[in-house]
Length: 170
Image 1: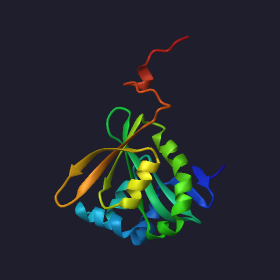
Image 2 (image 1 turned 60 degrees about the vertical axis):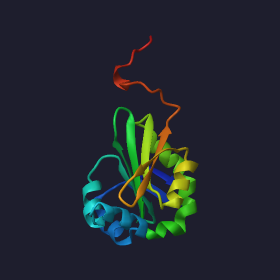
Image 3 (image 1 turned 90 degrees about the vertical axis):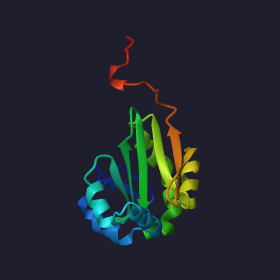
Image 4 (image 1 turned 180 degrees about the vertical axis):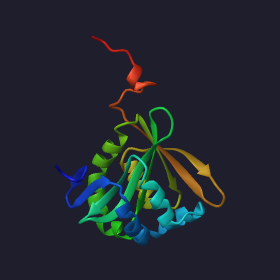
């Protein structure tokens, strides 16, 4: 049995684990460090908290973490997707782009709608979100910094309030 969830070329998606905390903390990209600083968070503290949560995954290349991604419930059938990237992701960006449609389909599996908030200055991430089918829903104004709120619906999944209690037709 494979020890990864999915594989695309040399990139693999694995469940986030405590072993990823220090490497990600040490190699986290400058833009993500800045974003964490807006919330008075340090990378080590953030990753220690988030690797313990459900639906958090790491993109690796040769067992080196390049990104951490996750989805948290944000209402009925809605998830809030987030991602943070190591500096070395730049060297692997095109491979990551190629793998991204499968990643999004996997993350979208339990939710009809995914939300994602991206700092206004993160041009590559905004382009990535749009390329993956996210649409700009709003600009959230903050203190000296704005977020772009993106939304993506899973059109192959019916939007019902409670999947478990919908009628069954025999």
